[in-house]
Image (cartoon, rainbow over all chains, first blue to last red; front, side):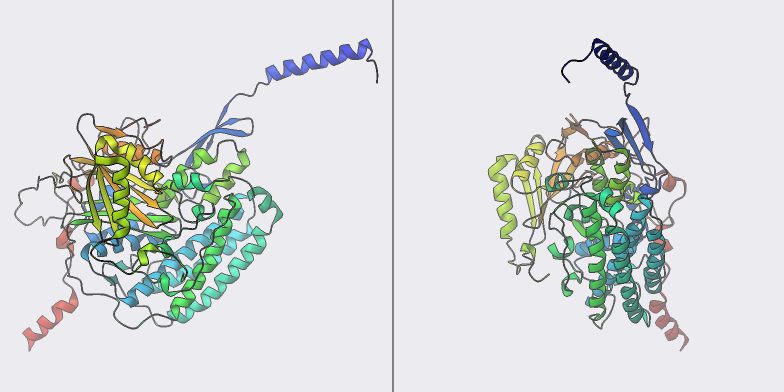
Length: 390
Length: 221
């Protein structure tokens, strides 16, 4: 076409002008979107305030504090054995794992160690808490993207694990089973055999979830390449657990520290993923659930005979000093900095919970993403509200 | 994990701890006299107290030395609680309240301290850094420029202890309402629930049956 007729030119100019007017009239204004405090993706009451430009997030900030219970203050008016009751409620999906680092820190200050049998049983219960916690995560993952089936499977199979925890400790959610110097009770009769059978079921659950979700095209397109967190940023923000390992950092406190637990007695693998995206975080958690089943199965064969409680005074006074112990909890590094002044109760306890750091990256991670991705990124970071607010 | 190269797992070289002493020497080279006091628990843990002015410089030096993982940052109030510990026997004679301020490991001169923990993910070694917080100005430098994760921890510490952080972008409250008065984690902030109804505390402990039964049997026979 060599020449446009005047008429065509005029109509072209007119349409351009109309477009420009329309653009001025429809100038996208910043919009503030409130997600939560009540939202299925938040596992509690987290509120995310996001400022949007069209479909894109330009600024986001989580607003925590809807469930602050002040455990650090409350521990100062409790005796050492009473503190486990409180810290059970921090990460309520894997309660037993919360008790262990505090007990280990107290034992470190008292310079005692639990007998080998107690250490192995502790490790088994610790890993069972992880399975109960992460299996719910794997099921919940589908719900964020509209898939309902996985969550029913997760609730069914988690129940098997909770039954085991209840069988051993008497509490489904808050076992309060760990004691300074050992454990409250020994394992009940038949528990070991039942655990072995349950682990087979849980392995099957992992296979089903992998089939249902991880191979799913929608899941992959919603997860792959979304919410990428490079290793440097992850370390800067103190991300821990699967979130850190999904960024390619090979660090697992179960393996990488000398601690009075039985993880070194089992043969297992620390999984990492080089991508650092939402998919990697979920995939690492799936593999970790399998590894946990492996650890439990191996340790069930190696429970040594002997006492479950070492000799401790009836009224526990912890000598003056400071100790830091952290363990690789289902959500990440959970640690207690315990300061004792030689009294019945701790002088100060600083609780380092994994979700607090894992969620502090949200303003960074959500910058520039699209609205539907907010939910998948939050879900893949995986947090428990009690673990943020403490 | 048999192939783990874990420096902590090496056979104990008591009483010295070459790895942690090396870290302290390296830190001294980097920040000089700012290291006030150190405490090494052999093959276990390491504490370093630095001068308040060098708080941020220490973070930069340790970041350069390989401590790239930020674990936590918080405050300490070393004053014993004027309200007691809440575990006293209510029937006993009230004792003179303890008012002596004793700082923990690595000592100190002030009532408040900030402390933080960094981890070297390659050598698998952690370090706890402390610094005094003087009354005037009641603040230390912010770590947010070195570790982005310090942002929330400093907000929490400011809210709970009132410690200021120079250069922090946004010291809003995290948990409490904006108009909340007082700093809850300070020892002189009363825990009202405990004030109203004292905890039965140690008298709550019932005698353990295994220890009491033999005595009863002896008495009966």
